[in-house]
Every structure is written in structure tokens, then in C-alpha cells.
Image 1 (cartoon, rainbow, N blue to C red):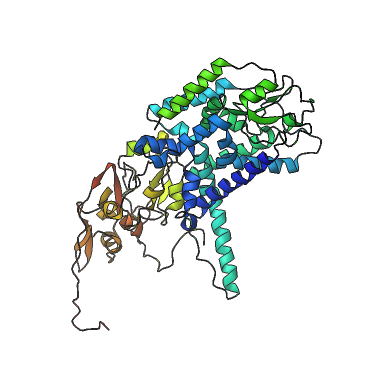
Image 2: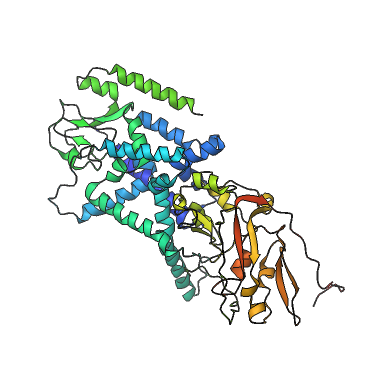
Length: 523
């Protein structure tokens, strides 16, 4: 069986998905509103499954498509669709170029079902109990998202802006600059360590992560045991050259028994083109099994029918904008902002529900145009590690933006129309008079009032002709524009206390014009 074309198809499709997903995370402004978004996100298993449990919408049934494809052809998701799988293949390719010529690439690896399926069982058990920590830490799509968004994106932004500046130096109008708000350094430790560990495993052990730690790989491995089409070795055709085993990145070809552990096979098809005798091939289990003088397995057929019925039953880098520098307080503030509840993104609704569905893929972090969405460390507790929260030291939630809800792949952030989003109360601003420069420095300010989009802050008379902020809690939406604009350091004079369950604010009030224009022209 000469099926060399299978590897070519796999390489082209996997590179296409890798490119689409990477561009989605590193340059969302350009690619986020295109059909590439749907193509890249729809077949991702964990985001699709979580979104389906929340919405039961057909648009979120990509995981069913993947399960069906796996039942037919095996783990092609792992080799073609999963961006983390494609990243591992790149590491393997680089390692092949650096490896000594006579060194064996890969060897047969004994299966570790207790570890692999134990992790899957633990992940499912934690998820059913309302904890998605294991899922978010091991989900391949979320891990790739953190690598692309937190580590690759700043390099892309630097290169993009540097190229634009180079063009401008020659008098050519360059592309619009991109902005990136640096997250807290501690939140970068996990993606950095994960990337290093993944690169090492890929270089020396191939797809070991997929067959030991990945819960998606374990689930698809169980289903692929009953796949209709499999890679098999007809004993009458095999010459025991060992080329297939050496090139098997999953380490699942046992040459002594001439068997392929298809539950661990990631369908990379690397074994097919290296066999000069065409002694390994991809065909229907029954047809190839007859060639190998194997009797049909009735129990396997029954399990295959049961699985089918079960599936059918499931329906510059800093990002700082140009402008005048804000005045800072001369007397350092002393009252600490006593925030007790983090601010979840608009559309999260209930923080507990949000924590149960978010896998911390950081797609919303990449999509946020104002950089206010940042990975949290322990703001939500250990179970919410690296999930996004609103960090008003880096930005504020724009009154005219609802992008995070539209892009969230798991349904953790529900889509909101702009009119509805403008009245969702994420929290309430709290004013600390003892920190305000009007009180400490006897200096006029009013930055919080100027930036508030709902007029929830009113400047009331204070002393000596000065005014001081007063918060109208009924119309405050907790967007953080006031906190972000406040010039007081180290502790700001106004901060937002989040709501565990988002509330509804009253419609914003319109301030009367201070000066009525009487003539036809104001100048």
C-alpha cells in the first residue's frame, strides 16, 4: 500500500491550523473578526465541550465532530487540528536536524494506561465537582493559547512595530502599531516551564505528553481503539526493517509482535513513507485484518456499535498610549485598597459559574483591545489559577466594547449586546478620601470624573474652591476607568470592588452642558 500522500495531507492541514490559531492569539485585531476564528476554534475539544454544556447550541458541537472522526480514522485531531500537537511536531523536526546521524530517533515505549487514564479520570472527577484546574492546566488548546498569548505575542508585537518604524524611517507609512500590556511576572512562570518541558519531551520522547498527561489524548485514545480505519502491519509483508518503529513519534509500534497500539497512535503517518516494502498501511480494520489472517472480533463490533449510539445520543510593547502625563501625588498614599472580590469579565455573570467553565486559554486576553484582561494568579483561588480578571492598573473595560464575550470558546464569558453590556455592574467604585490628592495635596484633580462613562462620579464642593469625588453607586458599572485614571500612588484614591454575581446598574445619567452655545459658531 503506497499511501505516502497521507503524511503530506497531515502536514498541510496541521500547519494551516497552527498558523490560524497562532495568528488568532498574537494579532487578534487583524484576524479575530474573520472566518479563521470559527475554523480554528470550532473543532477544539475542550472549549467546544464546555460551551456545549452551557448553551446546548449546534454551533458548539465541534467536539462531536472530532469524536465522530476519531471513531472513523483514529486520533487525527492530535495530528492535524490540535495546535499544541503541531507545536510538538515542530520541536521534533528541529531536534531531528540537531540529532547525531546515527542516533535512533525513537524507540517503542511501554504503555502507561494507569497514569494516562488515571489523569483523565481525575480531570473528569474534578470537573464534575466544579473544579476546572486540572482541565485548564492540561488542556492542549489552553496551554497553546497561554504560550502564544503570553510568550509569543510580545515578540510578534515588537517585530511588527519595529518593521513599521523601519518603514517610517524611509518615509513610507507603515502599519498601525500594536499594543501589548505586560501581565504580572508570576503568571508567566507556568507557560514558560510548560514550554520548556514540552520542548524537552518532544525532542527526546516524541508525543509522550499526548500519551501520558493530555486528557484529550486519553479520551480520543479510548475511542480510537474501535476506529474503522487503522494503521496495521500485515505480517506477510513486513521485512522487520524497523524503519517504522524508529520514526514513530508516539512510540506505539512494537516490532517484535508487529502490532500497532492504535490507542496511542496520533495518526502522523510518518511510518508509511519510510517503509520501502509497503509493509505498513492505513485501511479498514476488517479488510486489513483478513489479510493478516485475523478473525473478526465480535466484542469489538459490539463496543463500536455502542460507542456510535452513545455519540449519536449526544445532541511599541508597553501598550501605553500617547498623551500628557498624569499628575502624581506629592504625599504618598497610605490607605491600602481593600479589594476582597476580583472583577470578572462582563458576561461572566456569576464568578463561580465562570470559574467552572474557564480553561484559561487567554484568547480573551489577546482579544482585549485595552489590555485590561490579564491572567490572575490566586485572585480566584487555586482553582482559578491563570483565569482572566480585570486588572485596572493596566487598562479599563471600554464602554463600547463587548469583544471578550463574543470570542470566548468555552462559554465562560457569555456574549452581551452593547446596550446590555453597558448596564452590567461588574462591581462598585469605592472612594478613599485620605488617598485623594485633593485632600492630601490640596490640588484640583477630577481625573476619575472625566473618565467615568456613566457619570457615576460627581465632583462635589470641598473647600477653598476645590471639589472632591462622590460615587453614585446606582449608576456605577465597575468598568475601572476611574481607578485606571487615578494618579495617586502607591494606593489609588478610588478602586473597584467586584461583585461575586454581577448586578444591573441604572441607565447612565447625562450631565447638563455647562455653557450653552448661543451663536452659530463656538469660535
